Image (cartoon, rainbow, N blue to C red):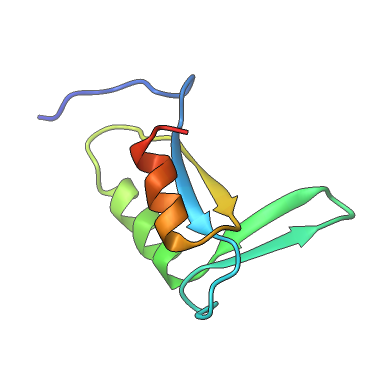
Length: 80
């Protein structure tokens, strides 16, 4: 049996490209009426399905990123 980890207080932050060429994989949209950002697409669905298979609860939040992919990777590496 797996360990139960509690991370509701500090969710996993996942950077996603806000302006990608392949919106069917990751698409970021904003609803100004609700003041909410939505992250959808095939890659998001696959990630969420994989998280559901874990033996523990994993809370996460998708963070849209408008820079280049290389800049996103650098910011993750630098823990920005």
